[in-house]
Length: 178
Image (cartoon, rainbow, N blue to C red; front, side, top):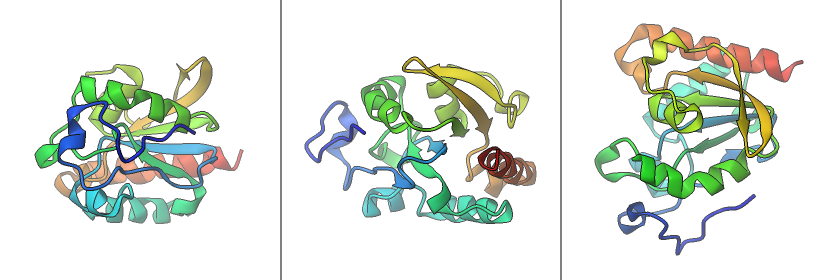
């Protein structure tokens, strides 16, 4: 796996970061959950999904019988965008080699939220049209199953998002048991 070092300056996000946020969980897992970008808590601790969104993700995973150690959890970019804005295409492109290397061993990728889905499959439409619908994609010449779904923070604003996120984690659990 290729990981950025503490001197990484491939994009401007390096200017304000506290820590580079690297993947957690099983680094050779069958399933990788890919979020959009680190938030404030993640930047402080250097671990993905440890703030409010992490609590929601952990809850959805637990509802499906999953633990963090069952999957790899990462983000499209490894540094926090200012004021938690969405990462830009240029920032995601700068981190793409790191993300691609993280996805090497997995069979399924779960895109958590609009930015992650856009980065991984180029889809810019309404997420609700494709949420929780498996599709095949190719990453670095390797075919993977891709499952787009809602970002955990969307559950704060819409109850339907929480239902879809739990459903996505159940799809992940079933896939892992195949």
